Image 1 (cartoon, helix red, strand yellow):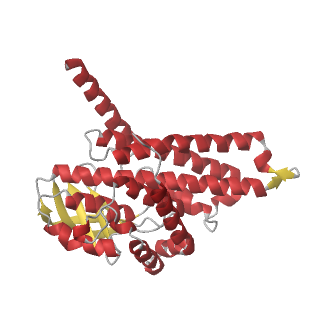
Image 2: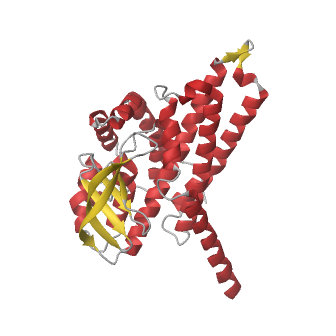
Length: 337
C-alpha cells in the first residue's frame, strides 16, 4: 500500500494552501465567531471554485468525484489554516451519506449547491443519551439529523456553548424524515466525516508546530533563542515524531475507506491525529508562555480548534472502543478459520 502522495496531489495541496493564505483566514475565522459569516462564506466560495467542496461529490452532481486521499489532502490544508464553517459536513459527511442512499433524489437536489459553494450543509449524528447538536446550523441551508437508520431534515432550537468560538454549535430538532432504513449510508457518512476531521487535526498540528518553531527561533532568554535550549528542542521533536507517525495512519484510512476495515482504520487515524495535534497544542502553549493564553493572538485560533475537534466526531474513548471491537472480531474470525 502506497502512503506517499503523488506530485499532482502535492501540487493540489500547495494550491489550496496558497488560496487560504491569500484569503486572510484568521480575520474570517474571527468574523465567523462573532456572527458575521460574510468573509468566511467568501472564502468558502473560493474553495469551491478550486474544486475543494466537490471532491467527494460525483460529477453527475456537479462535483469532481475524486478519491478519498484527495479529500484528505484538502482537509489537511483546511486544518492548517483553521478555516471556518461546516466544511467537514458540506464537503465530506453529507455527500458520502446522500450518495450512499438507494434513492439519489436528495443527492441531486442538494449536492450541486454544495459543490458550487452556494449552499452549506450540516448534520448531527444523534445518540440516545445526548440531544443532537449541529455545527453552524444558523448559516447552513441544509440541516440534517441522522438517527440510527433514519435521516431527518432538522431545524435549530438554541445556541450551545463551544470551546472554539468559531465552531458555533446549535441544538437541533427533527422535522420530517427523508430516508429510513439506511444505517449503512449513515455509517458511511459518519466515517467519511471522521476521516476529514482527522485530516483537519493533522493539518492544525502541523500549523502549531510551524508557528511554535518560528517563535522559538525568535524569542530570546539569557541572550540566546529559546529554541537552542535542549528541553525546547526535545519537546518540539516529540511533536514532530507524533505528527509524522499519525500521517500514514491517516493515509491508510483514506485508502481503505471502501473496504471492510474502514471503521477500524478511520478510528485509528482519528486517535493518532487527535493525540498528535493535542500534543502540538500543549507544546505550543508551553513554549509561547503567557502570550499563548490571549485570545487576540492568532495561536488561540488553533489551540481552541484542536481541543474542539478532538471530540467533534466521536471521543477518543469511542474510537479506541471501535478499534478494540474490530481487533477482537478479527481474532475470533482467525480462530474459527
